[in-house]
Length: 96
Image 1 (cartoon, rainbow, N blue to C red):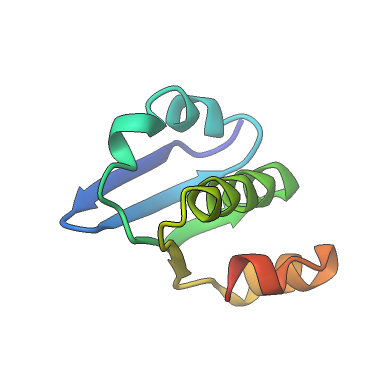
Image 2 (cartoon, helix red, strand yellow; image 1 turned 60 degrees about the horizontal axis):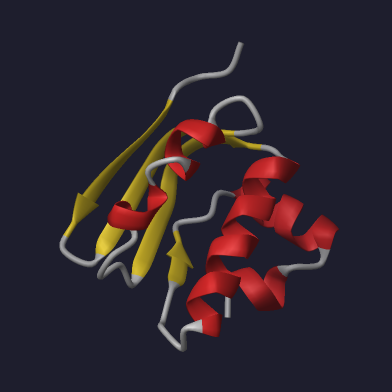
């Protein structure tokens, strides 16, 4: 069983903590619309685990913001998340 995914919104930053994986991300996805209003950054430094499904969610969020021509920066990626980003070839999407 995965850790709980938690989030906190402060001004224009959304902080994610815990585990972002296929078991935990639905709780966030169901509530994402109001959480992402006026957000310019997602801080992932508090994530202890991210799997490929969690990475796919970050890519999707980045794409949704780009489609609306709104800035979204994903900050605080751990070494493990950076490795996953490199392996999937999404560095230019996630960390632009």
